[in-house]
Image (cartoon, rainbow, N blue to C red; front, side, top):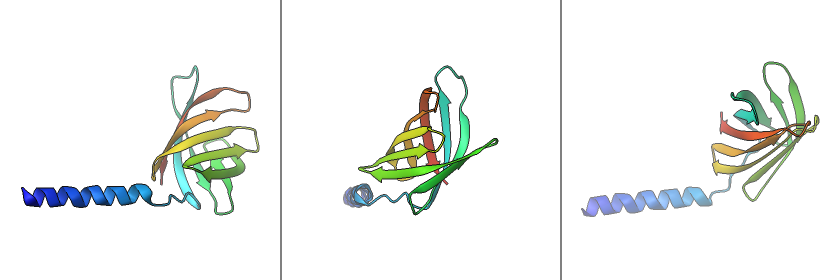
Amino acid sequence: MNKLLCILLVLFGATSCLKNKEINLSDTRWHTQYKYEGFSFFAEKELVLNKNNTCYEFGNIDTVYGNWVFEDKRLKVDFENKTIIRAIVVHRDSLSGYRLSATKVSGEWNAKRK
């Protein structure tokens, strides 16, 4: 019983420390999925967040460039083609939010760190 209690206390302490750690998205790669309203499938792309707050996203057809900002566990990405992504940190290895296209079509968006 005492061993179990000690193990639980150690695990609780470790997860508390992880929650308080600074999350750094600089120089990271993400596998993203998004689905616009009215579509029945998810599209997949790769998102790269560079150290200098520039970024690019590429898929099967194109590559788009933009800028990103991360504050208060919220990611804002603005691409040159006017597409935007707004997301929150779910875990340091996953993000969730929405994507708004240049034509103002919106949809759900999520990402996992590669």
